[in-house]
Amino acid sequence: MAFSTLDIVLFAIYIVLTMVMGLWIGSRKRGGSESAADYFLADKSIPWWAVGGSLIASNISAEQMIGMSGSGYAVGMAIASYELMAAFALLIIAKYFLPIYINKGIYTMPQFLEQRFGHGVRTGLALFWIGLFVLVNITSVLYLGALAIRTMLGIPLLYGIIGLAIYSAAFSILGGLRTVVWSEVVQVIVLIFGGFMASYLVLNQVSDGEGFFAGLNTLVEKAPEKFDMILDKSNPEYINLPGISVLIGGLWIANLYYWGNNQYIIQRALAAKNIKEAQRGMAFAGFLKVLLPIIVVVPGIAAYVLGADIIKPDEAFPWVLSNYVTAGFKGIVFAALVAAVGSSVSAMVNSTSTIFTLDIYKNYLTKDPSDKNLVRVGKIASTLALVIGTALAPTLSSLDQAFQYIQEYTGFISPGVVVVFLFGMFWKKASNRAALWVVILSIPLSAAIKFLAPDFPFMDRMGVCFLVLAAILVAISYIDNGKENDVNAIKLSKDIFKTGWVFNFASLVILIILAFVYIKFW
Image 1 (cartoon, rainbow, N blue to C red):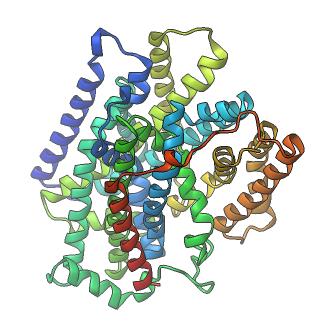
Image 2: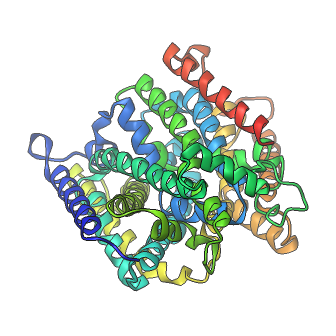
Image 3: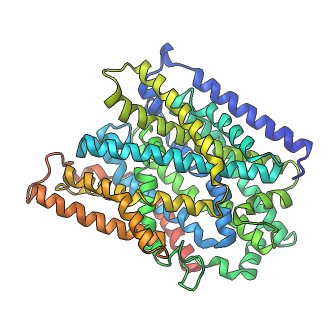
């Protein structure tokens, strides 16, 4: 790809300024020292707009801009259900999950599980999460970002992975969550602007200069099959997006897990000033989610309509950037892509560090550690997570659609996690032993179904696993507790779930938008 001098200058300025900002924020200490609360939860000082922006910056990464555009090329707008249904899930989690988490005063998801179910469940899922973040999430995002850099600049894959890891380290290691969040606020602005610019320019090309909306209409006219939101069984991509399951089936498991039980996402809401700020931040993130298909899916469909000369779908976004984004804007869009990778990797690294330090190291590897010691261990854990992810990322080069890979293998653990959290929060009879068995059986059950029925859609597999694991939890809980409530059951009142008018109005608007989209493109 030919970058103009202006592109290179704009990109270099962005990279240098964001790294300097990250290092500067990370080097600042309140009162001359850094507490564990500050490093891992930003001292609970984040306002709603930063919560929402940080959630989206953590979420949008190369797996969306590259991977989801690739799926847009191969599948079409149906892949946008991951974004649209996430907006709905954010509202559910903000109203019903967050009040419980914040009232409990927790730092990590495993910490909540210990309060409800004991050490065994906490430790088991802490280890699962650390493995998932490092072996799947960090690794795949570094690979996809480096793939884009190789396609656009010709830089070898390994060098791109190392460069992205160093860039992410500026935000994730030195200053903890505070550095990550405030860096992401800047990055999400560049990311959304750059993403919209890429979509506008390619749609303008599709419409022969008639503009953005004319380009969208042209896509619908030339590739109507790419705008089916609900796929039927005759569609070759049905195995990845199995029809109505995207509305009432397994996609809910994926979304509840990702937005409600996933440490590197929910950690932003836990760091909010108070419950109202956290809920408004999640509603703000919901608004952004309904806009994201324009950034992360439309370029892939446009590449399909324009007859992109690519080998595999994940090359669609780099192809659009290379061929249809003009000088100057190309540097900004490329900066947006790097911002997406950097913010997501830094979020995952920080959360891996948080879980290891507070759930493994503090509980099993030391006695009465000081805040200084916890912060030091957190920084070491962050560094190791980045190093391992960097070493493993090149092994993913054989993937066709990396986004689907991430979703499928995350789906090995998500049904069990959602069962444990839902029943732990809202069913008072759920027992420690039942939750532990769900954790133990989650991966073997998913693997067994995949082995015995390889053509069974993984989204439906998540739904089946959820139902089976829920039945196991209920049965064992009745054996353990009979008609009595569990001794660690959470006491809930109706008042805890009351929300303000701002959140309620925002929720209504989001739901109306979602209803319109699915009715229009059913």
